[in-house]
Image (cartoon, rainbow, N blue to C red; front, side, top):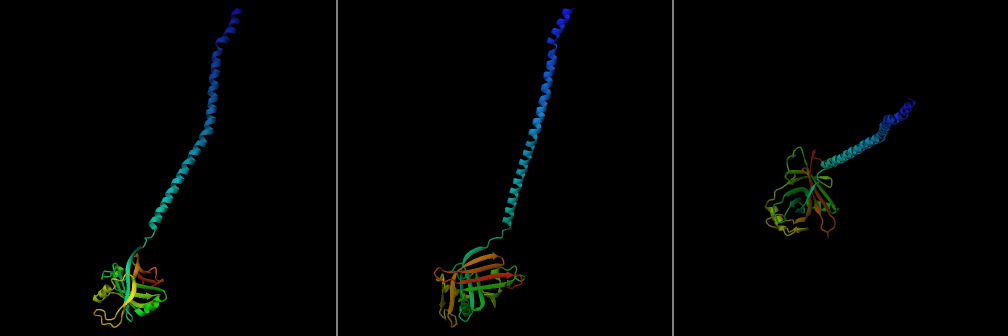
Length: 254
């Protein structure tokens, strides 16, 4: 019996400790990896979420700034005022020395039908004196409340200002036989000034007719404003001559 007990004490630890060891082996990996996973998840997951959120916020900010810049550019484009249109026309100033000045605008010097013909209340010799200073600005104004729907070239009567001084009125005229004859006699003149002898054609006037023809820059600012600016030839001294057509609310030149 003593030998059998001794064998049991010796052999039993050889068979049964396997379960104990296996249990210890299984318990250790189950506890330690969970701790490692928890620690790594706490260290790695939170910064990644923050980084992703910051990246998304930056993308949203960049998109909003781009959209804002596009909106501002679009608003600037729509609010920009329209540019005035410019064209070249032929302008002729003519009149007898002690008579009224006529202002004629043509697209073609060979045509005897002007697009605009005005008789000004200023005398020819008076305009010559104004031109000696080198600067002449003639402003023709009409009242918007009375002639709002009328085109500027069709306004019958204008209030006239010359270099800031009121000098009566200007009236729209039709090209009669005498005016067409004058324009026909000046067809060969492109740019220049001169005089037509008295008694030309069937005119009973005993004074010669003075004229000055040049190219003008026609500027259309809006439906209520147009202007004509004399273009000087290169070899001639500077002469500033401008004619403004303005439609104002009160009919007063400012």
